[in-house]
Length: 340
Image (tube, rainbow, N blue to C red; front, side):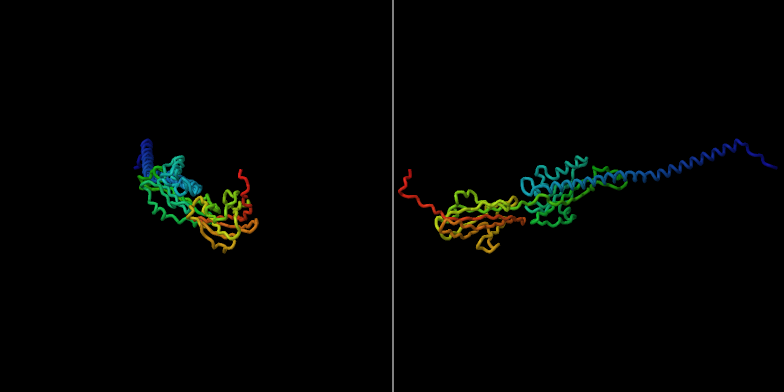
């Protein structure tokens, strides 16, 4: 006995239910997959944003250290504000304040630490540090950095290094803290080394003869108003003229104590004299004695004296001056002359 087929309407309803069930199952699976992948996508997106901002911050710290090194390299070696006190808190317009102003113009927070190192001759305080309480000690920071390049003071070659540290937070949002990547307390540090651009000023040597140190029978010529040794330029130096009232030997004291140096005091400078009758380079000291023989007539006796002055930075300069001696042969005034 054959079975009767089911009504068409019943078959259609069963097919609709099966399609709806399959669609709902697929939606549930997609939802579960999305819920599983969404945290990964969120972390990936936040990571791209956060590390992009961190990279930008690091580049800004690099630029800040270069800016600070340029400022330090252009500072004078002496004066009220110099490379030896440029990063001191009491110095007006100090290095950290200028770096902080640069960072503020870039929309960043102040630096947590600024370190200035130098090996500049004639300037003190080779390590200067300004920082807040959370920064590492300067000793620990310096230990992580290589030594500065060797300085050659005689050639005016020396270096400065500026290290800038900037905290990551609040300059970069701490968006991954919930996922275990916490940047609180993390800082970016960058250092830049520049060669010092201001040179050590050489000494200015001067040879003088004091009227009080002249022996009896010897005096300075009236036109000798200053005993300046001149310099090593093309101009001829002004001679030191002496007038003797008698012939014969005289001991003359020459002094270099009027020599000056912008970075050093007189006690830190060394002197070397070269003069006739003395072995070259053997006469040292700020003062020296030389012998002169006054002629019997009005002949001018001239000797060339050279003084080299060297400062504590091994920077030297030489000057030479002719010393001239002649006789005063003017006749003494007659007693018969009327003084009126």
